[in-house]
Image (cartoon, rainbow, N blue to C red; front, side, top):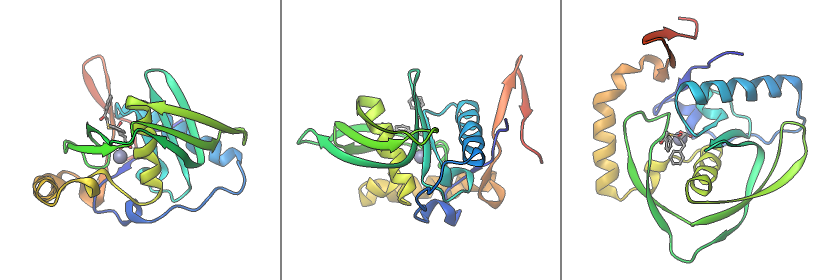
Length: 186
Ligand code: K1U
Ligand code: ZN
């Protein structure tokens, strides 16, 4: 398995809508395994294919040990009249956070890595993560939900930070015994 580079804000792949998966192949299963490894190395709870430069409609989620492979996911219902506000971050916009209002509970339908359809309902962090990842598959980012003022502040902070990511690429490092190891090819 490999840790993949993460694309950051500015890379057009993050804004490109994804293409539905027609067939679950071994190549797709390898991508999914690499996405899980990358997500864990980056200490995230979710990761969508565009974040690793792919336009397949695929994402992975692990919230408190509840692991999900999302192939061609869609939201089938939401519950909660008022939108619940909570802070979000994004592995593709490091160190930028903002409050996002979303339906409190969502039910999704998706396929797993065996091509089996399933339905899952998530509330709190899991529900938020499902929505954040499905947004990625539609080319949407959490900053799009911020008020104009907060979005402007977030983008101005990002303007100062983005130089750390040449080519809009974030190299994910894993820490072993207090040392940093770059896992991806330089
Ligand atoms: O898709 C991504 O960029 C991953 C993102 C998912 C996410 C974060 C917050 C709310 C909903 C979805 C992250 O995992 S960023 C890391 C993070 O914010 C976090 C990590 C552990 C617990 C809680 C949040
Ligand atoms: Zn994100």
